[in-house]
Amino acid sequence: MSPDNSSDQHTALTSKSINDVAQQTLSQPPAYTPAYTGHKRPRINLIASTATTCSIILCYGTLMLINLLGQMGFDITVNETLWAGAITFASLLAILGLLANLYRHKHVLPLVMGGLGCGLINYVMHFDYYLAIELLGFACLCCAAMLDWRALTK
Picture (cartoon, rainbow, N blue to C red):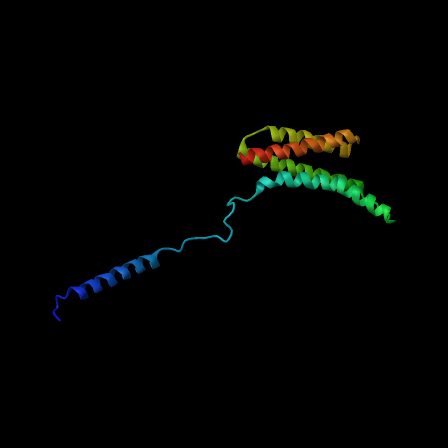
């Protein structure tokens, strides 16, 4: 064999290029692949709708549970101040969720409608109870949550 054998030179060049590619691949930082590839931002846009749902469940769900247990023979008394406070807290949390989402979609109508609903609910819970005003307040809060969700999806 002569020292100018081209097949040996070709093999040497090929193995050198493979080694260079392998070295470059090893020197690069590994690609970050998160386990969950969904939303990168926290899902704060669900606060308003979740808090609205919780306030409705706290109000009417508790009434239904008390009625159901009463029909089964159990006598339950609920502290109405704590109950009204929990409903108030959930409706205020819905307003905070609407306010947080205002910076994302820049539509004021959900916040105004939610504020009206929250005000009506809090008036009914702490001053004079009227069923029509309570239902109107929850309807305004639900409409505000739906408008907020629609504004976020566009």
